[in-house]
Picture 1 (cartoon, rainbow, N blue to C red):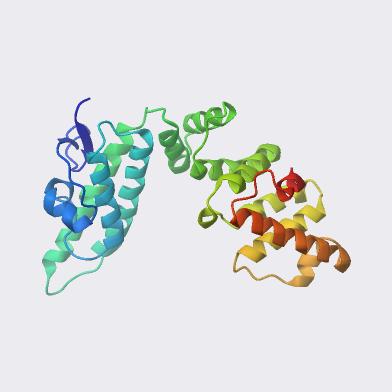
Picture 2 (picture 1 turned 45 degrees about the vertical axis):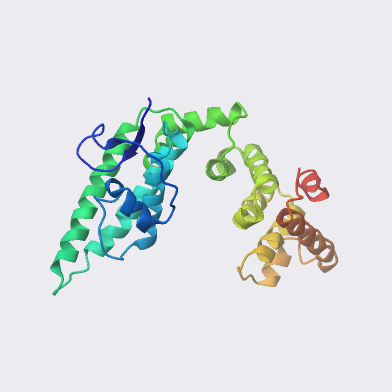
Length: 276
């Protein structure tokens, strides 16, 4: 196709995508609406849900610049629509006694957003892109979608860390070896700001299944170092039968582990080798 598509209104699946032309480099959502009113005409006008609204507008604008939306872009549009719809649903419940038009405006925006979301879900229902398959698996427990995600992983083509995180969590119960491989991949490839301390707890649970108490302790300690979680030290030490001498060694290893992960040096490090 030679024109861009952006889901804007709720009339029909095809009608919801307008062919949009031109180039506008302004990323500010207010300016985007001023220069591209078709991107914002179905949204509410006041300041409620401003972050969700701004994210949706900016993503619509990004789609406008795309000659053909990718599966990932459509997935992101679905997520932004969900976030906006959930927020404006709550806002629509706030009744204005004086400015009643605000309540009506939000109610209308919520109605349009839910219809638009349903239409985009239907539009992408048979799209086998891994991001859209992942969306169907997460939202509707769609097993066909899960199969696509899993096959993409087995073929070595799964590179999106958001999807990898969810697949790893699923594998903790059904395939601990795959789960461990995926979590180590996440620790090796994620930017420090995106590292989730819960990955350490997930790995700790895998080693608990394998009755490897030292690695369970090490990873539990790493989680505590990286998070604001509080723990009873006696309970943590109980993982290694209260062995204080061994705890000193493992605590140093936990500090080294966190340091390598947060400095983007985990791949091929001593810490990674220790957890293989």
